[in-house]
Image (cartoon, rainbow, N blue to C red):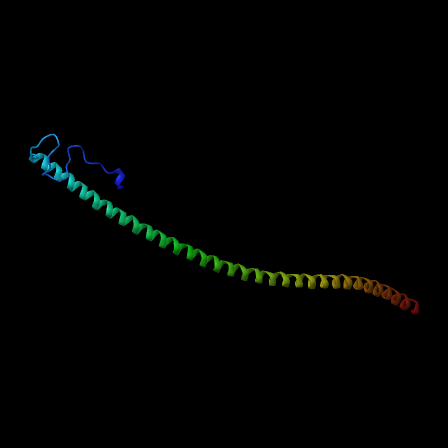
Length: 143
């Protein structure tokens, strides 16, 4: 507990049991002596609690700082590894894009050849049909 929040000794509290009040010259009674001792004990306990809490807070701050530093380091390592993986994936993707482009070009070339061959087959089929007709015509004339 911060010192500013601790309860202050009341007007009847004294530092030592032998002190006498300014108004009277009589020694303190047993009750006053006990109360003064209790106040000193309370103040001593509060001081010990305060120092213990302060030390614990300091340790917690140190641990939090260490954990924060470790976490930042881990995040940095993960980012570095992630960046490397992303770069590798980008390179591999570029390779696949090139290969797909090459395959598309090849497929387009084959498609064009197939169209040409279909046109030739159509032409040749019509020529064969004409020649078959001529052959039949010649055979029938020969008979």
